[in-house]
Length: 72
Length: 367
Image (cartoon, rainbow over all chains, first blue to last red; front, side, top):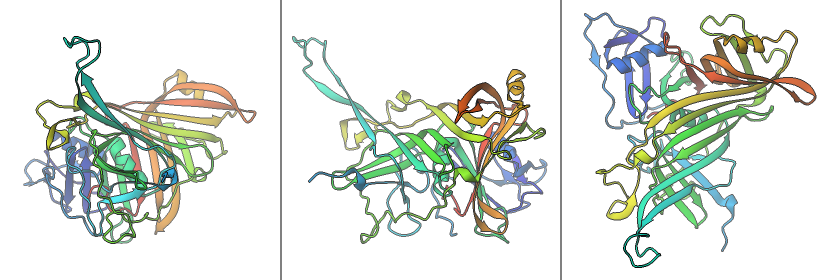
């Protein structure tokens, strides 16, 4: 399914960990392609809304490997 | 030379392992992969090697003639004072999921908000795992990879610091020596204690209201009615089923006779139990809420020091959909009290159950 940041979400980034699966969402107005299960979880957070189906989406799969830490 | 228990040092990985089976490696530059943790209790981890033998086999004796290492287990309990940074490092493995945002990246760039929610079994059954270590002088120097949280209890007993307690379950793997080098030793990989902002009972706000609408709020702090409170996050783990055939996970990876360690530790059940004690007031509505099984929203806010702007260090424990399981009248300090137990429910319409929100200056509990 496709999701995007809710209009009233104040930021541009969400970093998420569900158990052993990590996700990062960056960029307002960008639709993200996620699984139905992860999408449902994201919608419950209140930070996202479902995207209309015709919009192209950026695939967001669980991060398989660790990435460099973000600088504060 | 005897080793004093006061020499004990504990540390854990700053963020979860990449997966259950891969321990977090040490590194020698910031951001360090490990943080030192301050705990109150004096118990070390309970490492449990299990053996099997051939007693009762055709040995020609009542005694066993052979014994072998079957598998290894590890458990530990740690008690600590609840601080704004470190509690996130326990809430994540206890709850299972976190989403981190910056509520005002432009105006207050050091403020981060972390929302911890129960592990969604539709996504995964494997809770986050951490690498944990303990050192006691020259006598004990162990690294325990793949630690999961079985229970986290957060409680306020008085106006002092809020207390926390975690029950940990490891894979059984024990690495000795650990390889940990504590600051200020040269080339250290465990930095000194980070400064912490602690939460105290005097900073509490506790209220109960109708679920979703938040109508009919009862603010238990307005008349200073709160005596004690606790939130206990309990997870059932498939501990025996974590030892997997075919996995080839041994205590000594080069020795297949060294006994098995866990290859996974899956969650099979999860619950949150809230208890609180408040003074009885005339017209108290608690019995009615119990008798009608009214659906409630229970929330405890702990508001600490200012960070910047309108943002303080803050921990919110919020049962979004619950009901009273028990309301019992008691006596505390010769004043009548209600001892109330809250049963956690799941709202199938909204998907709401329990969540913890943490506002602090920690940029991430994930990377």
